Amino acid sequence: MNPIDKNPKYKETYNLVKDLFESTEHFYYGPFDETYYSLRVYETCKEIIAKLDQEVSTPIILTAAILHDIGKTKINMDKVITPAGKTDHAVKEWKRHAKLSVPLANEILTKMGHSEEFITEVCYLIEHHDHREDEIKDKSIELQILQDADLVADCGFAGFIRPFMYGSKFSRQIIGTIKYLKTEVNRVEQDGLLNLEVSKTIAKRKIEIEKKLIKEISLDINSDLL
Ligand SMILES: [Fe+2]
Image (cartoon, rainbow, N blue to C red; front, side, top):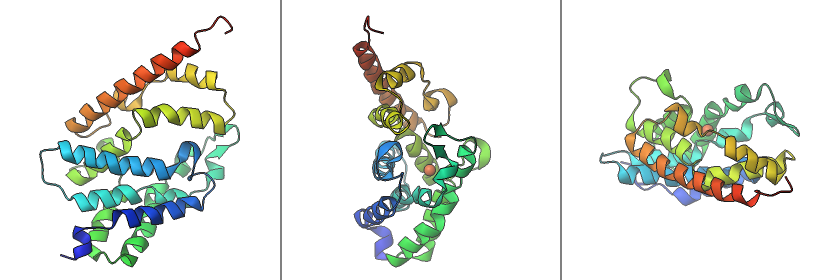
């Protein structure tokens, strides 16, 4: 096996990904800050793998985790958001990012010296990271981990802070965001989107933290002024 396939240079890959996101208007800071959320997906994959009692291709999963969202640098954000918030075409344009990530990942991994076989496997995970539920039958364990990590990474502290950043980008007041959080239903908890039991356990703990934080911050605005 190609030595770099066995021991990928994760930090180097992440730095290249950061450079790509830095060149964009929306993905380097704020609610869509991919330098944070991609890192969270990478770390969540590690958390799931550690708790999973099964042999998996860890280098493939972790490399895909770092690169999975780079296609966002190629979507047209004018079709996704306006200064007032999301557009009606947001979902359609947003969904293009998985496929758009593939050629970018291919280029980066080829430059880094990975084998064709490794790149094909990583790109498969990247292309399908958003295809949940019954869209793919007999998903590989590697794809199940990446898909779950992508959702779980947005629970807990990460999920708690995102609405505040979203609020500041679209001129919503902090009090408005706290009220929104109180009524928000966590889709990971509701929809049964996760593939693995291990992921469900991790998500449950993170959602509990998130709920506790929401409860605490809600007390802060328990005021006769409102
Ligand atoms: Fe994605």
